[in-house]
Length: 105
Image (tube, rainbow, N blue to C red; front, side, top):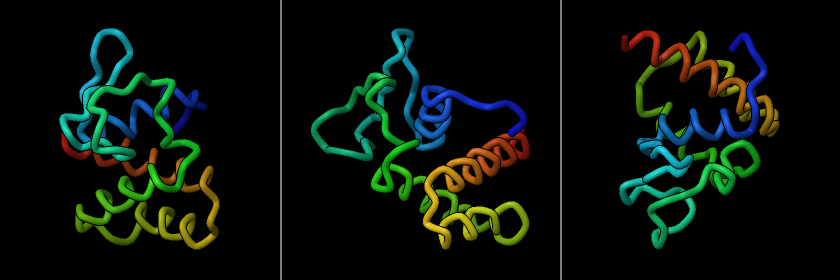
């Protein structure tokens, strides 16, 4: 993760990883997989909380764990979890997602 990302960029990356589709107006369509409530399907990017909420980021961690990948880049996520540092966890997850997406392509 070479460049510093804004909160909006961070939240966008996590939302897409979680299956949300970005619409043209900066809104994300969660298709029923909303991390915060079952009542809202569409979220404006300014209301996404992946970068500031453990409740939002832990489903991202769970999805990463479902990949079955262990060691290496995944260890940074485990270390961040143990340190209880949300910012460090965000960085580790962003690096994993970037690596994972590049690996798929």
